[in-house]
Image (cartoon, rainbow, N blue to C red):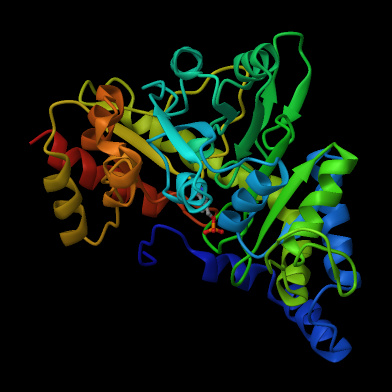
Length: 376
Ligand SMILES: *Cc1c(COP(=O)(O)O)cnc(C)c1O
């Protein structure tokens, strides 16, 4: 059996090595490392895949979120409503801009922000809602967009974990997550579903004016070369990463299918085990399984994590501390938020290896070790 890993980007690379190597060499020969044709082509291809009018590449997913908040004109003292059950990047950038994160609960089934909790948290200072499509499952975008329209709020989607996820509205229309809110943000961190061989990120919007602002801010607030209209930052996707991503984008739907197949295998293996809740899936949402995350009932989660490690099975706790309990947010009154569902989940979740290269032998082994511990 091949050794087990949370993600296996190496085997994935070896399958497309000739294509990728040629594309990287071509960039090296062109010596066009920053901007240029390859980056523009990737942005166009991704916008098309995503069915968004504009895709603006940037240096990473965290920058994408920050630039989105800047482009929407969020000011110090404004409030944004976000889940606490998320990766820190979502809320860190708000704090960096002195925007107050208002942490709300997630739905314990989907792990995503709870629309009813959002509505209760809206104040006159609220400017935006930041749903996170956690683990590859879409937040309830229909309700979120309705709420946003009713209260005049912006929606910034953190789509770092869900690129390629199809979300179906009640009228039957289908959109990719990240193309529904005013701005969608994503990351090409190597372990993400569309991963580069380094850092990368992108922002999506259908609004021409907003697209211009996003690219201006990502480029030193520059309207034309050496004319700087607003305070911006320096956030670029380099051409080598764009060349690699352009190739991997053509495989993204296959990668998603492989992840979903691996999830099906786990689902079946753990079905009817009352100590294990497998990830929730619903009809209006095509889960892309960035993570395969179980909720354990009446199991010593940390001991399972430890036991699996001893057996050569990696597993991860995403995330051991929710955002509102991070020291970082002491100054923002983080610990004053009362989020029992978030705390409850934080103690019970465990993520198993899921990626495009898992085979049945590996998965059977993982399952047997999990069940061995749980049923003992
Ligand atoms: C990975 C991730 C980010 C940040 O992306 P980077 O490219 O690492 O900056 C933001 N939000 C979520 C939910 C993520 O998983």
